[in-house]
Length: 425
Image (tube, rainbow, N blue to C red; front, side, top):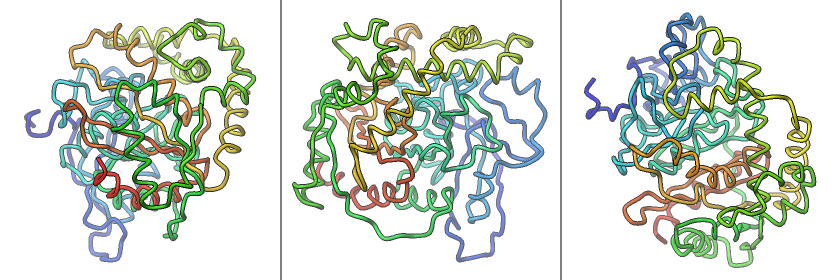
């Protein structure tokens, strides 16, 4: 397949369908693609790297998340390109190519679920499956101008999904249409249809929006006006999230002395949160993959290679504090949001880097996004990235975060809010 026709999104194409004759199935008539991290019976799960594919056999069963979608009537059209071993947020793969961002072809699509996001943004499928450990659904959704949902930790089965960092890994999904995002969520989460619930409060993380290079009248104010129109001004609250986290998550002190205090372009407590998250992810990645990496010595792309070998050298120092941070953060955010509260923040603080950007400068570029993305990542809360049109011809997005287990509430809210947001832009 010529890359220009499918935007380089697919590793391989096929058509997989079950029960085509049942009209009442919730996803009947919809098509989807699957990141090449999910097992599908009879296909090698490639994990974004040819050496991995070469040294592993075809899957003997299909991941439950994929089976749920097939059983619900959807048709799978293939497996998509991903960053190697899911260890990157750029969407670049030296072996299989960088999928072309349909919104801005000279910018990266975001990763590691790059092909899945591109397949949806290019209208090649109705929705797609990705995974989100550090950011791998939320970032590409933001960069490609589509909806992306990271569910509550543990809400969707990760059986038959290659692990990156098991205590952070989630199965997420992309869609262009909020109704489809919601329908897919009902299937994956095994939830019945429930009536939408009015949010008790929408809390604007003021310091997080100040971190963004995008004017707040194109992001936070669009959300505020939409909320006021739908639910009334009394729903809107404000918080300095960094101060709240610093006060309520004392274990972060163990990660605050690594240069975070002096960063003028970051939020110190959230930068520390990001450091704790990445430390534990490296440690878990090492525990699962070090044996294969050291035995095979795979050919990795620039940037990816350094990141993976750094993980292989990770020690267990401060790991106990990482777990304490997560427990304290979940309690702090649960208390902040209460029942049916929402936290609003930018998905990422700026525009996607150019495709040909230096990997070293890209790592610096992504340090601030990790501060924002670690809020849901470390707490295990659910988060949705919602497109907000364009600014300087680059896609914009805002994120809504709800407490653990509030996935149905958040999916319904997106469906209720989406059209008003688009009209307010």
